[in-house]
Image (cartoon, rainbow, N blue to C red):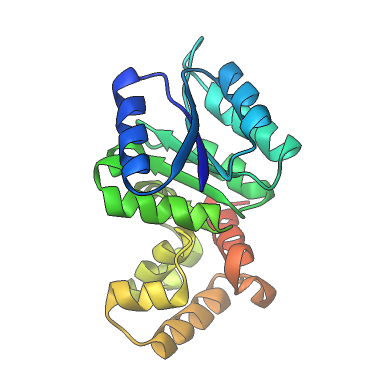
Amino acid sequence: MRVVIAEDSVLLRAGLINVLETMGFEVAAAVGDAEELLVAVEEHQPDVAILDVRMPPSHTDEGVRAALVIRRRWPDIALLLLSQYVEERYAAELVAANPSGIGYLLKERVAHVEEFVDALRKVAAGGTALDPEVVSQLLLRRQSGPLDRLTEREREVLALMAEGQSNSSIAAALVISDSAVGKHINSILTKLDLPREDAGGHRRVLAVLRFLEGR
């Protein structure tokens, strides 16, 4: 799997290269800003681009804007964004249009190598990987209203759904059966008035995020 990295921190960039090459990925290019990223992506056509949300020159949203350009020009390239802090607005902006092949993780996840690599492979395969902290912040913003209808277990399932977890992954995380997960999801969709046709795959993630954002 070919990867392009855009990270202005020299130490983190070197760490990412080391981790990925050790795990069998091919790092086609590693650059320090969004402009260089776009050049590298056009040249190497990677399977996935890993990029910092905030990069030079202003260290605000250069990474997000570059990600949107990549998504528009090369929609088959998966994107995994890294952020120092929880900035759920950026995650929601990227996922809103098309959640396929999108990931948004806090940089601290890189230290958990297996978790980080699993997220990268999931995104490269067309899945969605959202940091649990991002999902937690979205849930906190929507504590009142329809969420009050959910049981504690349903809230746990909802959070894992929003992270992009499959039914089997949710079952393993909560130590319950797949059929129990299915029942919880059906109950959640009913209580939150989410369309039944959004009950599977990326559309389920998109439906959940739109609810959590209050759209």
